[in-house]
Figure 1 (tube, rainbow, N blue to C red):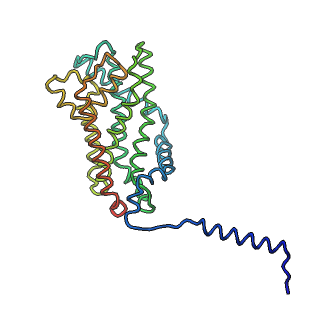
Figure 2: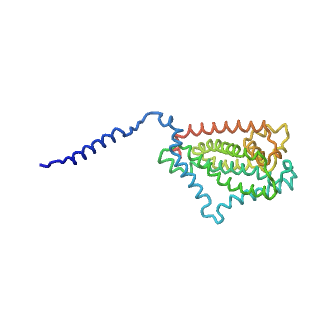
Figure 3: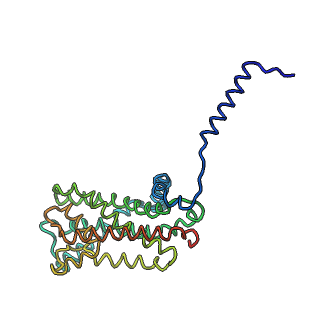
Length: 298
């Protein structure tokens, strides 16, 4: 017959106590209707690491297997600025804003437009591009298009170097308004995210939108004040022209960069803010409405 020593008895008692403590601390998984809906916005924070992974993945493959890589983010806006400056300034003889050089005025409008167009194109196809991930595991799907919009910041910050170079070349010193530039960056982010969420949710069900988006982006480049100043629009049409939300974003960027050389049209700017907030609400509403069917439709 085996005799248990005092030391073995104490060890067995200690293991039993530790096991009992572990059992009392064990969490209970509760499954009930509507639990995911109530915790949806909290889950966005809990799945933040997935957001980082998706954003970094898209950044790392953006210019993979290209010869000049990230320099494409410099070449495209630079050549666009040169063409717009020649066409609108030299050929069409459109005026600049104040005493600011025409090239600087064009690039101040091209920066937010490039961010908006890239973010809208990337976010509208984001769910289709991540079909395998969406159909296999649960996570808040809102992470996918939001990460696509954030990735567009890479091109924005790289292109910002051209703006600094132009300021140095023309010896242009911005005023205190440059401190408000982050506000207009946020405005551009919201202007891109709202329509992006709305379109990407519809794109899952109606694949026609993959052909509509490039057309919208191309058309929007010419109906938005990228290559010209908003001041060339007649005053009686200025408010109606501001129904294009990106007009307020571009005018805000120019005001922040050029200062008093580019006065801000306040009624149109406030109208743009109202439309941006409306489309953001509409985009989130449409996205959340269709989110449950993404895995089945995609």
